[in-house]
Length: 213
Image (cartoon, rainbow, N blue to C red):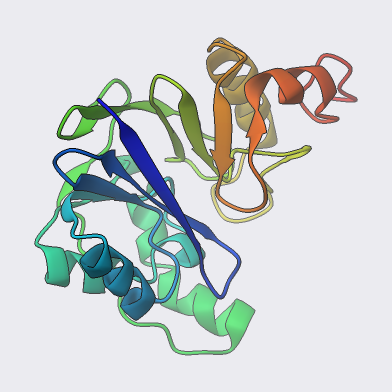
């Protein structure tokens, strides 16, 4: 099985990932926060069949394109149940942070819960509940990579001052769940560059071995 991965950085600097199986061209869209037309063009140009659209959390910059992609592909939109209340805040937060009127939030077809496995052909992503940035934040783990959403970044962690944020829960989730995985795993975060779990365990000033917290 050969896995492929495309990263599309949207206008809000959110990393959207399209990951799937090379042979079958079946794929999963993670954090569709970019331009919906650009993402749709990527899917069509690559000849992909989307099996799931999953958000690592419900902040608007990670889900703006979700409903349009859901309509285009027929794939279910997945979100952890604990983040569903944040969907009601989506349009208000768009007015607050961007001074724009966002479309209504996407309809959630199914929850993405701890231990669930989301598949595209032979590609399988395991859901790990990593709350803190938001109550329902999740990370998605494959054999060689982890998609950490806004839980863990290169040299940083997600903010916890938004509704539902919990700093201690985030620190605990990274240390007890993500750092329990193989340190060689690549980390593909919701914003910014790729890193590894080993590098963050060694050097991250918030959650690493020499963290201040």
